[in-house]
Length: 433
Image (cartoon, rainbow, N blue to C red; front, side):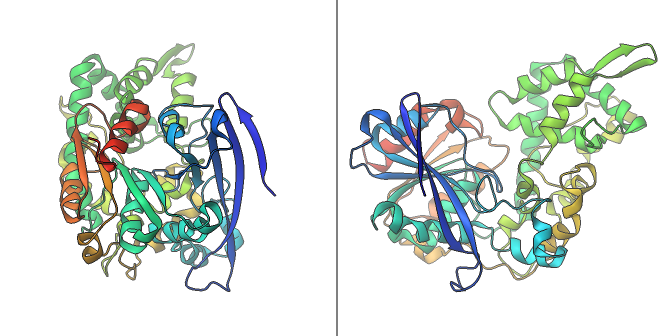
């Protein structure tokens, strides 16, 4: 049963599909995939080509737009859009601390989640494409991890694609997770320095918060244990266009005077909990390093291990001297499964995934080198989440891929730049720019 409804300027239709959990076992267990179809109200009856949006993450559902927001406005001029909740996210058989115990213990949960990477997501797309388009190829737009999915799509099923667009998400084709973090920790240090250059008053504010946390380690109202490394991980905000401003406003409201002394304000605690909690996207943490697994080496909590190679991120040493406390970025570390109540029940499951040594390869270098699908990619030159150097090496390995390298946007350029970013990339895949 489909349900159709309206928002200003658009017609929305809920679409639900049944797909195999393991596409290599089509007669086995099945899961549900949800997607929201969007078409301009003025073109509802038109025969339009399809654009499928693959969200970043991993573990993040498709955006819930109101009307023609952001890049969607540009897409709806040419396409009927399918906003896909990738498996395990949103309304697609969600996988989280509440549902995963239905699978059994940590071993069964980990085995289940091996089917939630880019390869399975692409096979979902190919399974539902005939029903959606009647068999015609469609255009895919992949943001961040969605771009990893697009790159696998080009490797595994290019016949399903009319064109492919990637924003901030060309993955390393053969690099280990260790290589990813050795490339991105320097970006994190630069973003911290840039933040303090913009807001020099935040140097002392961050030191004060870190010192308070080192002494008290408070548990926030929602149950999150706010340690110093957890506080530093607020630097994930710095990879977004407005992230430095948001971090500044957090820090300026950190403390409040009370009859019993100065304490962390309720507002600060509430906003920090909202920024750090993975209650809404637990697979982001559980599968974050698994998206890089392709060989016999385990990922083995790469971000946490590699961090030790960058001693400037040691907040204790910074506080012992007069150095600023550096913030970290998109780096999931094992301690998060102790501090975040949404992740604690999944700690052993995550450990098993981090130790896994049998991940299949995700990218076919020969097929990418022979690619015939029009592809365009926006590469953000100082992207804190996806290293531009890695992205450009991958771009050179995909035949015909055109890059737009820009320092105008951060990792959220598709959202922040909206119609302008998508308009340029569409022109590039069409040979109009």
